[in-house]
Amino acid sequence: MQYEIRQRPNFSIAKVVFDTPGEQLVVEAAAMVAKDSSIQMQTNMRGGLMGAAKRKLLGGESLFQNTFTSTRPGETIWVAPAAEGDLLPFDMDGQRSVFMSSGNYVASGPGITLDTAFQGAKGFFSGTSLFMIEAKGQGPLILGSYGAIHPVKVGPQGYLVDNNHIVAFTQGLNYSIRKVGGLRSLFKGGEGLICEFKGEGTVWVATRSSSALAAFVHPFRTVQSKS
Image (cartoon, rainbow, N blue to C red; front, side, top):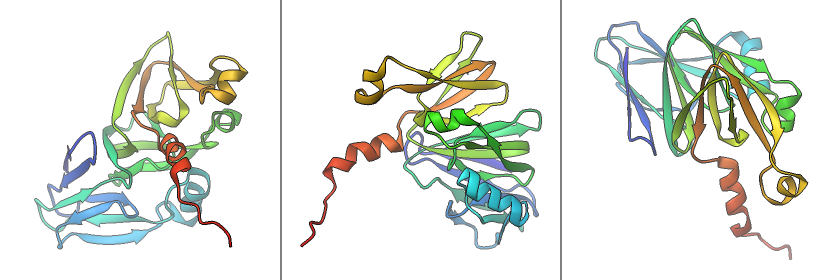
């Protein structure tokens, strides 16, 4: 299986080419854009009912996923995230997990498993979900995000990231929640709680935040008055 990310960093789309018959790609619901008509598709709950329900309720992922199976060499399938933005590919080697924010999973090979990872109280106080999605195994993994994606190598000195801009990070990194500025910054400045990463690894940061966009657009919404 080969893949290529096109149209980066905005409106990114992944072209996946199957090398042999029987190869499979697991795709998040509604992420398939186009495919050869001979590619077979099956919709199921990966990990069974309990595993799928756990990812849905705790991690915010879709209950059902689509598995596409090739029937001949050279068949292609195109996948893309729902939001305008970038795609982040991984070649997972089975040694290290990748942790991603809820809603960023797009597609993966059948050798990749997804599970929820509990973040504890820091998830609540950071404004993120209490659970993140942990991807582990061997094979291709494709994540998506609103905005372009920028990798940052984290060393012993640590690194600070606004929680709304976190796309993913590698195993070996831990984060804690810290305050920037005082109470005035927290309640009036739009800044206050951020994630401080420590350890050795990489964190991928989105250049835009969907929650920031929603806050920007909110004052301009047309509100229907009650008669």
